[in-house]
Length: 225
Image 1 (cartoon, helix red, strand yellow):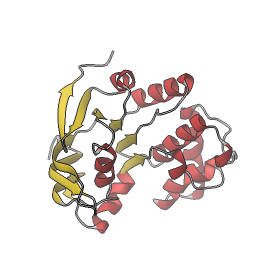
Image 2 (cartoon, rainbow, N blue to C red):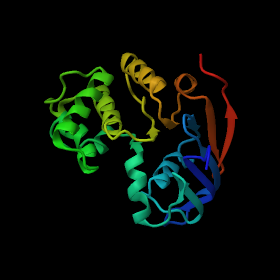
Image 3 (spheres, rainbow, N blue to C red):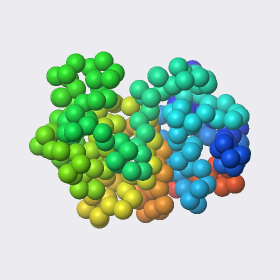
């Protein structure tokens, strides 16, 4: 089907085990090439929504379609996780290998790439991030900003169709934030970007959604300049 959304939710609902309702019926669509900001108060459900999209949490109601197919069971999300890259708020939740190259190569290897191809993707991604020569760096010795960049790199080496970015510039110094802003602005993938920083969202998105009372409300920011 032409111009079908990459992601579509209808009346998506979620409550935690303590019966605390977070999402009350989310209707949302993301199309190829879109970059959508997601804002809202702490605890409003933004991170929960991203986790539902990749199957880390299961909805209590409603429907979720990703890449043109309904996604319900765990097996339905294997394809999803190969094509939707989720960036966690804390880079220490993303990085678990001893070296930067191993972290960047892990995703491609898991998807069936050869070791030389995975290493080449890692080198290309480090160049894109401005981190040439970081292949052998010890991951837990990196600065906070370097960890954020490498975490983003672990997604880009997998060449996803969609990026789900949870506070990608939180607690960064100005130079690193500017670098990530420029990188995201130029990436072709569709994106959902959670952030509390309106100036950043204005630069990297064209549509902003607000999570409010368990639902999503949308308005346009207009074209980026």
